[in-house]
Image (cartoon, rainbow, N blue to C red; front, top):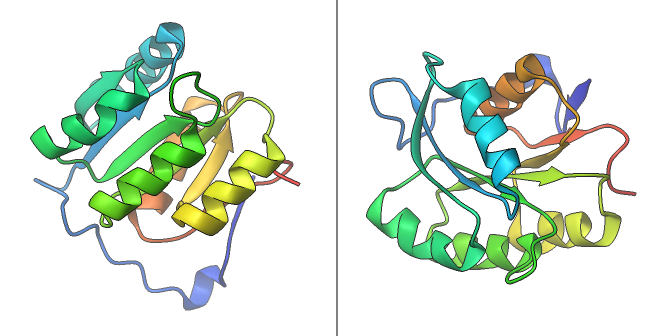
Length: 154
């Protein structure tokens, strides 16, 4: 269900520079605790992932990344205090090594496009995907590929 911005056969994938013990370290921000709980439940105990933090307050993210560095930040697009597009810009300015995977309910076209263009996010996925699709998205994201789900931003 995914496509990348380049030919899969010709792409050299190297591991993320910050990966520890071969695991991808994740940070999660979403203004709905149930989404955070669902994501952590899906990925908890998975052999490829560690969790650095999860928060419902986007304004806490920069401080949390400084305390506990992450390979990938999973961020909601629509949040009340600090929208995902603004958060993505701030994260990329302070922590350019962090890959950002945006989570979207419906592809919120303008905001996702802004995140792609202005913050160079690594990809986005819709919140209706399953566990296997999410794991693939995280693995591809950490492998330096740009990942965008079909049927998203328009």
